[in-house]
Length: 124
Image (tube, rainbow, N blue to C red; front, side):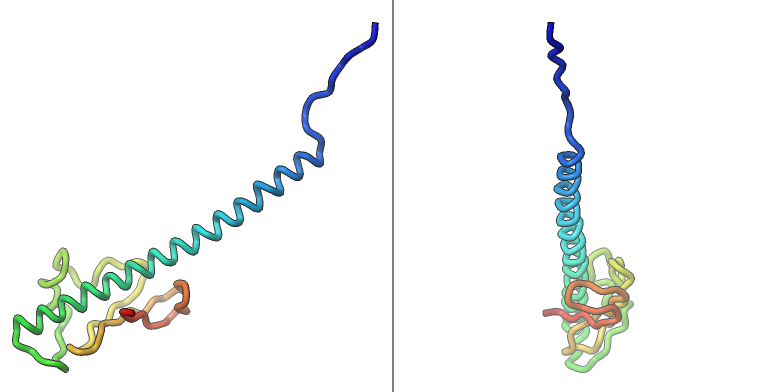
């Protein structure tokens, strides 16, 4: 009577190949996740700048101010969502109101997509 034992399982090469494939997929996934997160953070900062700009315009109209007038942060807060200035920080950025007629800006402490750390972000 012959022994008909079958070996089951994977060879070392097959295991290493599977690990390499999963590792490559993980690198691609993490890279895309980081890019998407940075883009979302940048989008939130730009949205906050648009809210500040709208609040400045409303303040200027309500108080009959013209180009060049400088609103204080406490002046525009009532015209902002949740009545808070500055908006909730995304990455530790600082917001600058700027005079009427000059768009608000934000300075980000870290790299976000095309902006280097310490760059000024403006409304596109």
